Image 1 (cartoon, rainbow, N blue to C red):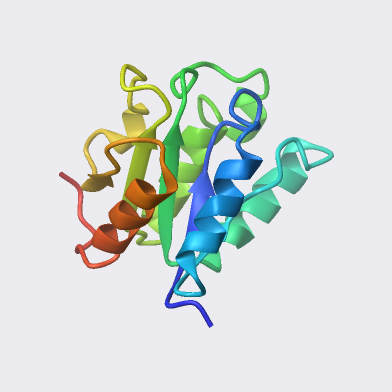
Image 2: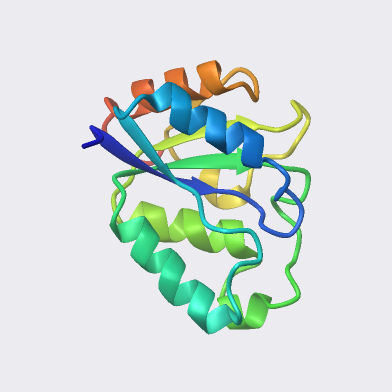
Length: 147
C-alpha cells in the first residue's frame, strides 16, 4: 500500500503526451507513492469528467500540478466546468479537499495557474521523475495553507 496518493493535475487537451513520464513516476515511487493520473480525453462529457475527477481527488491525499503552456487559457467547456479550464477546477477542488501541492513547469517560462499562485507549493526544479518525486516527498510533509 502506498504511503501517499497523488492526484496528477494536468491539461488533458494540450499536455496529454506524457504517458512515459507518468510511468516513470510510478516506477520510481516504488509503492511509496501512488500517482493517480486521469485519462487524457477519457470522459464522454463534462458532467462525467466532473464527477470522476472529484472522486479521484477525494481518494488521494495530495496534488501534483503539471504546468503547461495553456494553464491559464479559456477552455471551450468553461461554462459547464464552472472555471476557466479543467486545471483551475482541479486545483480548487484539491484545495477544498485540503491537499498539499507539488508542482512542475513543463517549460520554465510557463505561467503558474492563477488559483495556484497564493498557495504553498513545493516546486520541482525540472520535469524529471526524480525531481518531481523529491518535490512530492517534501510537499507531503508541509502543512496545507495558503501563501
